[in-house]
Length: 157
Image 1: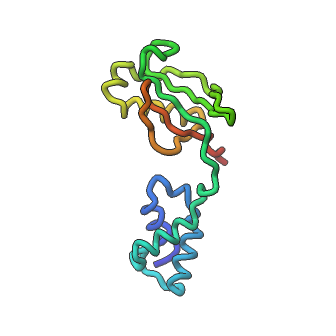
Image 2: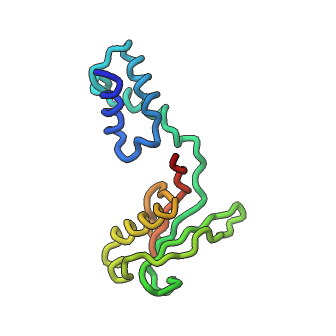
């Protein structure tokens, strides 16, 4: 099997997180571990394979983001009262909150958002991505909706 095929197999196992890993480095280590003769990533037991993969996580040294998106589903907290809203807050070192992105109305009514939280989260994720933000982690339920850690998406070349 050639390097390109192995890289494809590795990327497939990583799914949506493939960009978070150094695929070439993983392939180099896999090939080296099998003295240059590898037929498939299935030649490795799961524990050995993932141990190699984890050493090439390019996000491991990134600091935990202090910014969070707030998906508001509570009518009492809405700024514009036109539907679900998403904004971004930064938690400063002194525990104060600073607004990074003012709340924006999403193309999901408040009723739709309350009935289908997933639809509201998808709309928020799409809107944030349009503005150069990426979601880091999972949405956490709060009294007024949901929050999730976010960071600025890397600039595209």
